[in-house]
Amino acid sequence: MARGEGAEQCAASLLSVKPINTEIKTVKPKDLRNQLSVWSKLCYAIGGAPYQITGSALGFFLQIYLLDVAQLDPSHASIILFVGRAWDAITDPTVGFLVSRSRWTGIGRMMPWILFSTPFAVLTYFLIWYVPPFEQGNVVWYLIFYCLFQSMQTCFHVPYSALTMFISSDQKERDSATAYRMMVEVLGTVLGTAIQGQIVGGSSNCPSEFDTTYGSNSTNVNTSKVTLDETKQAYLIASGVICIIYILCAAVLFLGVKEQKDHKRNNSVPLTFRQGLWLVMSHGPYIKLVIGFLFTSLAFMLLEGNFALFITYALGHRNDYQNILLVIMLSGALTIPWWQWFLTRFGKKTASYVGISWAIPFMIIIVCIKSNLIISYLVSVAAGVSVAAAFLLPWSMLPDVVDDFKIKNPGLHGHEALFYSFYVFFIKFASGVSLGISTLSLKFAGYVTGGCTQPEAVSLTLKVLVSPVPVVLIIVGLLILKTYPIDEERRQGNRKLLQQILDSEADSESETSALGSNV
Image (cartoon, rainbow, N blue to C red):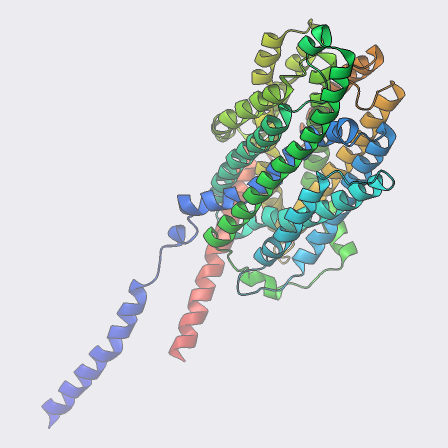
C-alpha cells in the first residue's frame, strides 16, 4: 500500500510539472517581441504615400492651376491657398486631441481614423481639380473642397504619424520603420509629381514657339481655347489616378500593420485640450525642434509653391517644368538611404546641418546664372539631395523628443498624437501664410492670369521667392537647431532608460499573469 501511494504521489507531481514546462516554452525573448518584419515596415511606409502624393500635386501645381486653368484673380487664389492651409493647420491639433482621447477598438486606436477618412478624402480631392461650369461662386467652390480635403487628410495623417509610436516600443525599430517611410514618402512625391506633371504638362493653353512664329492669329486663338478644355480634362484624369493610388495605399496599411495596444494608457488621466497644449509647449526640446524646422520647412515650401511658376516664366522652360520637378523628386528619393546611413553614422543634428544647408548654393546659382536648360537640370539633381534631408530629419527626430518627454514624465501616457499634430499645425499655418503672401505679391507685380508671358516684375518677384527668402529662412532655422539639446549621447541614454522601463514593466506583467494563473 505504501508503494502504491508513493507511485500515485510521483505521478501527480509529474502531471503538475508538465503544464509549467509547456508554458515556459511559449515565452518569447524580449528583444524579439518588439522586432518588425520587413513586410510590416513596408506596409507601414506605404501608408505615408497618399499624404505626399497629394501634397506634391497640390504644392507644385495648385497655384498654377488656379491662376492659369481656373483663371482666378491672384488675390482670390491667395485667399484660397491661405485659408485652406490655415484651416488645415487648425484641424491638426484638434484631431490630435481627439485621437489622444480615442478608445481602443478591435482594429486599434489609430486605424479607425485612417480607415473612415479615406473615402471622403478621395472624393474632396477629386473635386478640387474640377472646374465648375459657373463663374460666380467658383472661389467658394475651391475654398470649400480644399478645406474639406485638408480636414479629411488630417484625419488620416495625424493618426498615421502617431502610429510610429505604436508599431514597436523599440527605438531602433521605429527609426528603421521611419527610414522606410521616408523612402516611400519621397517616392510618393516623385509619383505625385510624375502623374500630375506628365499628364498635365503635355497640355498647355499657350501656343508653342513654332505656332507663335508661323501660325495665324485666328489659329492660335482657336488652339488656345481647345487646349484649355483639354488641360482641364488632363487635371481630372491625373486626380482620378491619384485617388485610386490613395485607396490602394490605405488598404495596404490597414491589412499589413498591426497596432500595438498601449496598456499603460489605462492608468493615465485624460487631459483637457488646454492641459495638452501646455504639456506639449512646456517641453523645451520640442519647442526648439519645432521652431528650427518651422523655418527650414517654410523655406522648402516657399520654393515648392513657386517653383513651377519660376521655371515657366522666369527661366522660360515652359515645356520642361514638369520634368525638372520630377528630377528633383527622383534625386531626393535616391538619396534617402544615404541620409539614413549618414544620420546613424554622424548623428541627427550633424545630418540636419549638412543636409539642409546643402541647398543654399544651388538656390543662389539658379537665379544668378543666365537661363540654361542643362544647368537647370544639374541644379535640380543637386537640390534634390537637400530635399531628401528636409523630408527625413524632422520625422526622424520627433520620436526622440517624445521619448525624452516620456523619461521626464513617466506617469503620462497616450499623448503622442499631440506632439505630431502641433508640429504639423505650425508648419502648415506658416506655409499657408507664405503661399498667401507670395501669391498676393505676384498680383502686385502685375501677374496676368492665363497669360503666356509675364511682366519683368513678375520674373523678379519669383526669383526673390525661390532664392533670397528661402536662404535666409534656412540660415535662421539652422541657428535655432543649434540650441536643440538632444544630441547622440542623450538620445542613446534615453533609449537605454526607456528599454529598462519597458523590460521592468514586462517583467511585472509576466509576474502578475503568473500569479493570476496560479491562483
